[in-house]
Each structure stands twice: as C-alpha cells, then as structure tokens.
Length: 538
Image (cartoon, rainbow, N blue to C red; front, top):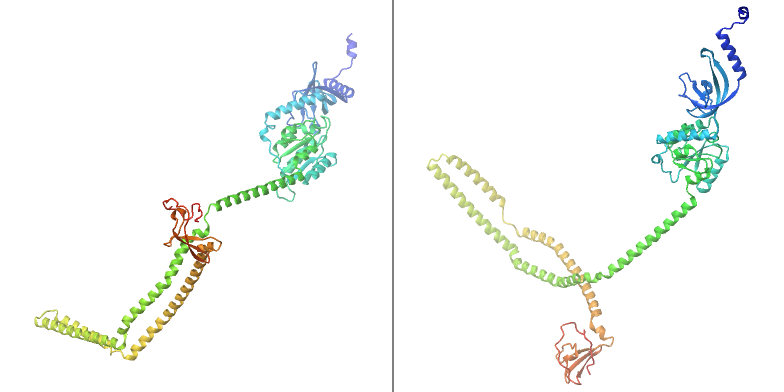
C-alpha cells in the first residue's frame, strides 16, 4: 500500500496551476459569455478594467486589457446585461479563473433600451434636456453647417431641399454615422464648427444640422453616446437633430434646440420659402402704400375742412389795405405841407444870413469881447495893486498869474483875426448850398415815388369801387328808388299813394308818383337795406 503510494507522481503547486491553466485555455480559447456586469468602477489607474459577470447561479471574474478597452464599440456599464467575447484563463496566484474580454455587446434590444433609459435619466438630472437651454433658431441663416455622411442620400436630400426653398451657403463636415468611431467624429464636427471664427476665411455657420438616415437601435447608438449629447448641449450654435425616421428617437433629440423627424424636414425648418417671403414682403409693401394713400386722403380732407372755416386772405388784410390807402392818400399832402413849412422857415432866416448882417453880428460880438477883456484886465490890475499895497503875501503869485493870463488873452484876441471878408462869406454860402442840393434832389425823387405809388393805389381802389358799385347792378336791369328828398326807399311801407319818387336806371333818372292803396306805416328796420321781400311799388 505504501509502495503504491510511493510510486505515484508528485506535482508542485505551480505545475498543477500551469496544467490547469493550459487545460482551461485550450478548452475555452474562444467563448461568448452572457451575464450582468457587476462591480464595474471604471478603468483602473493602469488603464485596465476589472469587473464581474454574473447570473442567478454563478459569477465569473472579467478583465479588459488597456489596449482592448479603447477599441470597444460598447463600453461596460454597471448593471448592464451583455454578451462578452473572449477566452478563459486562470490566475495561478489565487487559484481563480477569469475571462479576458476582447469585445462586449449588449444582450439584445432590451438591454440597450435599459441602458438608454438609464443614461437619459442621468443626463436629464443634470439639466441637459431642460427647455430653458434651448435657443431660437435664426430666421434666415447665411451659412448652415451639416454633420452627416458625405456619400449618403441624406446630404443630397438636404441640399436639394435648401435649393428649392432658399439657396444658402452650406458647409458639410463628413463623419461616419455608425460604427466604432461615429460618436467621436460627430463630437469633433460639432466642436470644430463652434471653433470657427466669425468673419474668418471659413465662415462660421449660423445653424447646424446633425443628420443621418433611419436604422436599428444599434445603428443609431452613436447618437446616444454621452459624449455626443454633451457636445450638442454645449454648442454655441443652434442645432437641429434629424437622426433616423420619424419614429426613431435618440438622446441628442432631447439636447438639441429642435428635433426634425427627417433630414428633409430639418432643411425645411432651417430656412423659409423664398417665394413666400417675397410674396409676404410684397404684400406688406402693398398694405403700406394703401395705408399711406389713406393717410394722405384723410389729411387732404381735414385740410379742406379746415380751409373752409378759414377767412379769405383778402379779408384778413382788408383793414390794413384800407389804412395803407388812407396813409398813401395823405402822404402827398403831408409832404407838400412839410416842404412849404421848411420853405417858410428858410425864408424867415434868409434875410438874416446875408454877408452884411453876418459881418455886423461878428463886429458887434468882437466889440463886446474887447470891452469885456478890457474890463477884466482893469479889474485884475486893481486886485494885484490892492494886494501889493496891503502887503499881502500872495501879491507876487497874483502878479505872476495876472501876467500869464493877460498874455493868453492877447493871444486869443490875435487868433480871432480880422473880420471875415465878403468873398469868404460867399464861399461859405456856396459850400452850404452844395450840401443842401443833393438833399433837395433826394427829396424830389422821394416825392415822385410816393406820388406814383399813391396814384397806383388810387387807380386800384377806383377799379375796386367800380366793381363793387351799385351802378354795375343797375346795368343788369335793376333800379334804385328814392323819395322826394333823395333818400333811398328800402321798403314799401316808406311810401304813400301820391308821393313823388325818383327812379334811377343805368342810363338815367325818371320821376314818378306812387299810386294804389295806402300801406300801413311801419317803423324803419335797422338792418341792412333790401333784407326783406320787396313788393311792387305800382
């Protein structure tokens, strides 16, 4: 018994562990395992990811190496049921086995929908889907950016629809609309359009359209990625999402500023119809012109109504015109009176302005001045002599001042000179006549102009008087009745049978006698003549 045991082969722990490892790896070199992800806390500091796949009866450790994690099209998330593809291996140090995962995919549409709902609740809690974040779309964008595949039917539908409605400058950022790199390319496109400088060499779009055709939930999954949703929410440019058909919904539909059911509908929402816009502007212009015509017509009617209540211009200036005519008629007489008065005053002083009279007045004034000078000189000498006799200390100063005063007086008398000669007086008179001559000419010219103006005004007044005279009325077949004293007869009650009257026609007067029954006397009316109904006088 002991020999049999002794003959059995002995293995070390490492040999057993390696043998188990080779057996497991050879037997399960490529497997697909379905289970729920548990214990996932994101990537480790080394870049690897560690978690557990479990179901109702067992659990299996799983690892995704750093190099494979970056290539995964579907990243692991806690609580998600997935199908993991990889190989089984053991970990000899702890005698455990695990699966090294190469690829992860959701375990059916139900799992994807569960993940989608979970992600939607998370992003909604952060406020990325709030209505307050959504912006108004520009009414008429000059540049539209389109994020889609450059080879699909979507871009052709968008360009065709834009050309039909309102031709616009379109920039296309080509991306893959499904697959592993779809989400990253869409994020780069949105961020790239937002990074463009307004007014730069490449114009910055006023509006973005993110579009692709319809497909399954797996095909549209790139537009459900969290990175794409955050890029749409953070965009400074308004975005229209047009992913899939009308029944397809992705998370960027909630984050975008507007969701269009199809790419064609997105193009229709982006721009108005140019023909309709032109028609609308034409209609506004027509309404504006009609309104302007109505306003002008109303203003014209109000002006006519206001002008009807205004007095005539001739009535406004009638009194002033009458005052002017009266002043003009008095001007000539006043001017003549003024000239006569000036001539009378001149004739009164003319006899006193002869050379002989002026010489006499000058001689008389000179004699009076000499007499006053002699009297002043004698008085000054007496004052100086009196001061000297009384030994007044001011005598010396008085004598000196008197000498200077007498010398100045003699100089003034010498400056007066001899009397003016007759020739000098004639020269002065000619000079005065030369000054008065132009003034007389100006006065004559002014009088003539005033006379012409007054004559024209008088002529106009005569014409106006003739047009307003009652004689023009007589020329049309009317007559004027006067009583025996020459007073105007305005009413039948002013006459009695047998009264002598005079009837004035346009070509002369005739006498007549009133016949018929006497009319009762009435108090003459104080109103205007002819205001009552005139009856026959015969």
